[in-house]
Image (cartoon, rainbow, N blue to C red; front, side, top):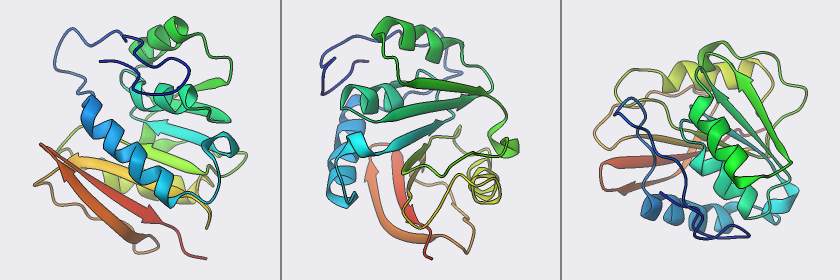
Length: 179
């Protein structure tokens, strides 16, 4: 696993030693970033990014490498995320050790949120609800939820599904939060 683009292009990241963490494949991550670039209103350096169920931190570190304003990682176990963050050396990173379904209140909404819950464990919908109720989302936020391609994804009715793509075993659902 590596950083695909930006200032640390090609940088190898530490990978999990077991299957407890399932990183998003490099090719899928690259495709998702191409879609993100077409959907955002401004350059990535204008956005605060939230990487939930961060695991290795690859998605958020990719955002940092591409110039994101800030990147905040959320996970119950941040050890691999923090190890990779230290390896990369970015200064604009923050960490929240938390169950994603019970997030602390946010001081501000985020511009881009990536959510990669463990597959088939019904964690995506309650996490989306927590993001809404805790102030992480506004009408400018782009939300991407990765699930297994055959997983049934229920999502809060407040969100609007604006795009959906499948890459290998993963499905990426893109949401907005209409005003």
